[in-house]
Length: 125
Image (cartoon, rainbow, N blue to C red; front, side):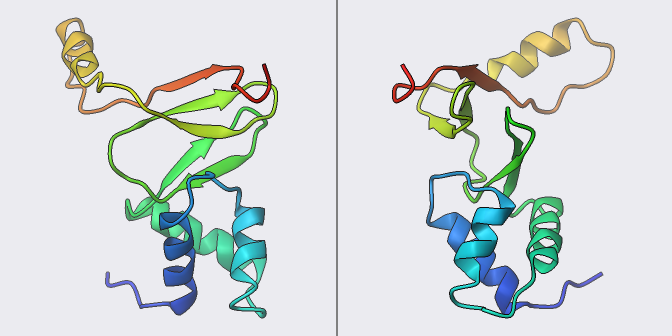
């Protein structure tokens, strides 16, 4: 099924491509409203879900129960602060070998992984 082009969806995707903040849907909504004042929060949520489903963005479950969104779909890792609940990109070497390690003792086939590191960020220390 072909997905119809949407300027609002494209604006959401562009916003996420140009921020490293890992915003919530509410934050995205407030920023997109500047360009599209009639956009609804429901439209933002629907488009975020569609972009996640098509692999164009990443959804990260935050420690405070909120979902955060990332426009960087390249393999990278995240740090979640347990105090301020920020989600930060973690600059580190790849641990792709974890898939091989998992496959050694698993009868199926591990094809990927999601790893989140958590603790206290430098601003909260």
